[in-house]
Length: 114
Image (cartoon, rainbow, N blue to C red; front, side, top):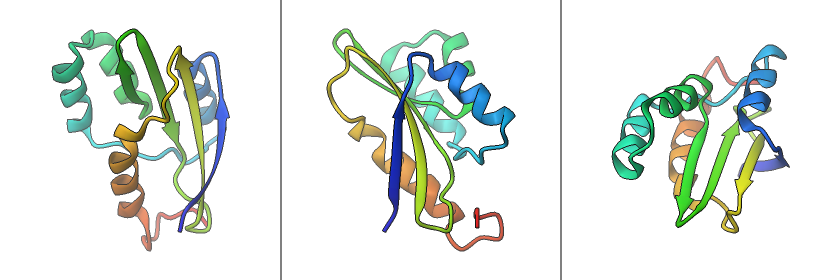
């Protein structure tokens, strides 16, 4: 079972860039996820490309938006999640399957964070 440590931020893009600079092993999200976001939400291509380059997940409902990125699991059981909420009260459940599938790709691999 994976455990998580979640932190909020006012600027998920800056946080994702900082995580990259500190060598936090960020969870890699499949390219087709972002193609789906553009089609489903009519996102601006530049925004989708920025999220793609930083492995940021996205959701929205009505006028609310939710951004998140996650680390790969440490010791195969704990990961870090950083979220930015813009009037979004939910928990980003629509991204859970994407995140779990991405985490499962690294489970047991040499590249897993120890």
